[in-house]
Image (cartoon, rainbow, N blue to C red; front, side, top):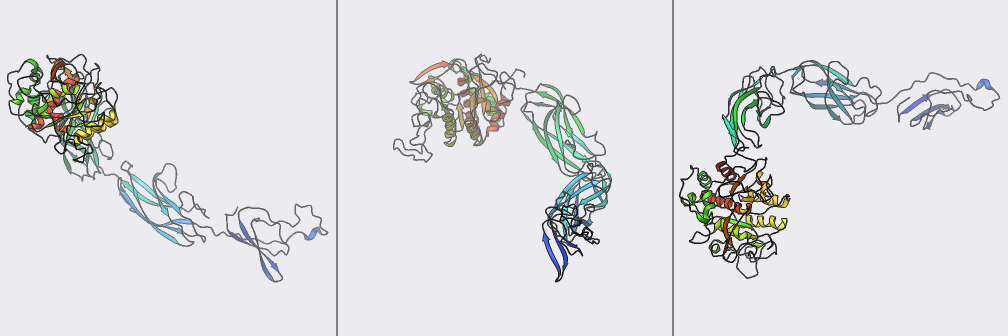
Length: 631
């Protein structure tokens, strides 16, 4: 059958109109002689053979002898396009991993215009396209008029792992078969090409690592990657693992990777990288594995010499019970100053046993008392009139009290002593007692009565997010955290929690961390194996706090640290004596009481070094905490 939409001329000497057999979708011109010459008759269908005018019909003729039409041979010609590839310019040899920059032409050697098409490219062991060829890519070609050609160029990447040897580079015009052609057997152009390998060989040299590392702590390793082959090595990645043996396997702990640039023959790259073990795994003896070309992207002459193993001991000061253990104010503040821990001083005794247990008096003896630091108590409010707290209450000096205006433009009217996110007003007084008790542990005034706070010269910013019955909305807590950050708090105490996460609170804790504000969060009092939220966010930001008694033993009500590594420490939370509204005092239990001890220590650290970031505070507190328990 002839191709679609073409004009075909059939020349006949017959004087009668021929029968027409249907062959749809084509147009043909039939030329027959008349007395006035040739006449063109156009039809929408035609037959490639002319039949007798009465053949196969029931028409009666008086002379059946003259019904046969005299015929002559008919030549059928087509004006279809015919696409070929010509004049390709490509290298005779190329290295695996390189790119072929190919210039070529697509010619339409037919008489009819060719629509747009794609040229496809393959690497083949013969000169025909088949399923086992390596497909390299395609190139779009615009429509080409009859007899014209289009000059094209394309970049074709040869993968690193292609075997060396002799190939043909096949360029196949109209590779998708989109264009109808008069000849589809001449589309492919084959040219010989040789693929070579780089013959690289990457090895690890001069590997240096610490003999022991601790879970959660950063450590540095150094090494160099050398290409001892004779060919250039393409970019690669060195992979690092913690393993029980000297081979890489699925049960190894992947630590990370280091990107290596291309290396010429004989060249090397010296590297230093930092890693940390963020998973709470079993302590003991391991191997630190360095693996050159860890992704196996580079074809090498020797693939068995990529790994170097260094013996390393893993220590773990983190316990699923008490995290990193009891906070040590003397060691933490000393390390904030890049000093060794402060010397012991006599205990204060009495109601100050909690300060003694965490070594706060040792810090006071060095002159660090929390001066210049503001701690936001995001809680049930604070009795700012309490005689043991009144001189340490933060005041918004940019706001004029009682004028009904937002003088400082922070969005809150007359927020002289913080803001109440429960009733949406400036009344931050505490009727519940919880927030006031927390405030006394943080910054109770050092005097001859009551209680002395851990950071007794710090300022308390009251932020009321819990109602008088002790409950609060997630949105109020999140807004309270953001208010504290935006209005100058350096530390935020969150002696609140629940067993379900909340994205608004999580986002607020993250926001505080990004602004350098340290959020200290209670682990919860459900005797659970993991902390409540938001304390669980201490995996990434801030600190989680569990409770211990006067002997340093875990309180039976305290939620534990859990198996997941997070910045969890303990502090006094049993029988803690502190302030209550109306100039009162009482001893309360809870991780809510332990948390302000840690918030006070953070205030001491920042009074010694205000430039500490959230990450630095977390690291110092966890590495200086005292823990005799194992993971």
